[in-house]
Image (tube, rainbow, N blue to C red; front, top):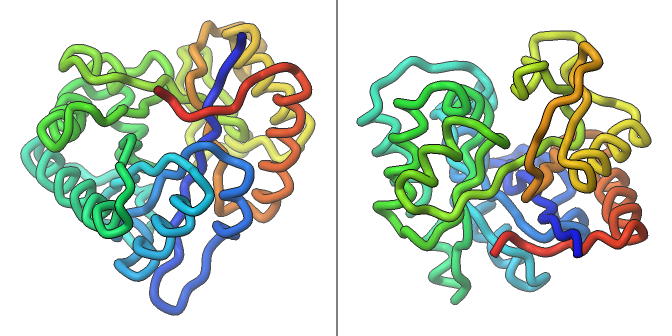
Length: 252
């Protein structure tokens, strides 16, 4: 039986600014990555998002990023492994507090944006993040780009890791995501994105931008919650996967 997790980055509103349709997307996913206040989100949004996820039976995870609200955590920041270790612990435990208040367990951690992408290639950053997750709670699942330094670092520490693939992003021949600075980084056509997910989940491969076939492991599929068609895409993807006999469930 083919099984996959559908995750979405949520809780990205803050203050007076509303981002995404979290209350609706939660009906179509199995795991929520909740922003922890550094790249997006705030204490009130974190509290509300955890409550909504629990009510819908969606698995809850922390989504720590660089302290970069202006750049939405997508700008690379050069800092020390110690700093990364501490700010990841800080953010995970901020969300863990709201999980405790709602009597629900946090299940996973997925780094956000530039932090995620840098750690995919940098083993030192990857180890700092994985160590922060391990030292906070070794039962937490670490999400990382499929086949990346981050998943390797998690495995070396004995963490359960989830190899993540992206529905709406294009891939390079080495398995890396195409940088957002490039014109072809995003897949805007729903049908093309769904076909890519089916290929990754059912065949364990993805077609890179140069046409080459890259082996990939798909434990969890990311849907971006801030896209203009995020809700309709989540609905369509879940329906197609279910019709193809794929079970949608959180990573164990």
